[in-house]
Length: 288
Image (cartoon, rainbow, N blue to C red; front, side, top):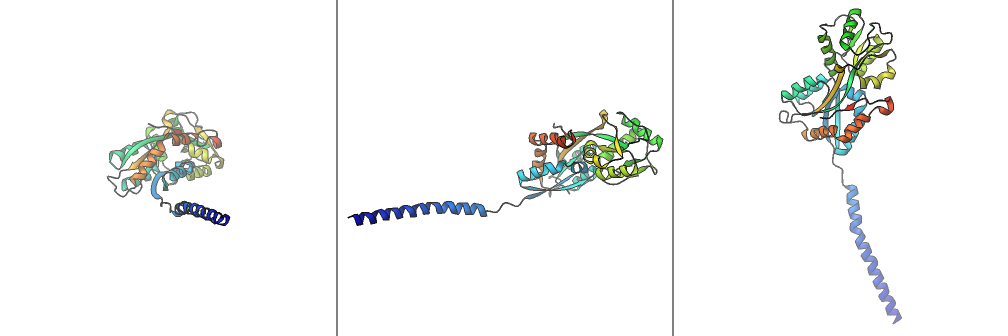
């Protein structure tokens, strides 16, 4: 009797063990399946932008956030705004981040760009040699350009149809001066490289404040000489290349990027960028 009860108990115990093992196998199989499930390949988004967004380090902060949230790999082409806009007209980029409002509006009017949104701003400043041979100062950028021309001081221009170059040419036009000669030095390069040349040539140069702050420690011969004028605001917009006119663009991710740039979370990141390192924001949020 006791022997029979022992075997009966043992039999029930073995059934319970087998049942428990059977219940865990599907869970283990599910876990294994989840582990081996491949992650989708990221899509690629081509961003054409001005050199200031890259030289300042802002994109190094923003793009990893966007890429992680959307499983997108962003290919950045940092050139002058004119070249970035030209890429838009040819459908060679998916989204643009630039700072030449008048030229941007022309691109929208032509139908090459859509969904244009204001993102941020900083300002243009004039920097020059620490001994300031032209004796310029204050907020009046027009008066400063006139004085630089009169004194034949070196002036370094990007000469690359960038947003900064367009702004500079607009100032020369406003004072009815056509700069030329050996003292007007054209680099054909981005903002960071052009600032380095101005530093070497002991010349004046118009720059955006963000790139200046990011590069200032290496520009030992230069200082800010003119700033704060109401006409020196530097506004950045983001826009999609129009998929109805350029059917090869990645419009889905381009739209996501536009929305990302104007989101409150991204705007807070933009506003805070640079404060710890430079004691001030390099860009300020400016949504519509």
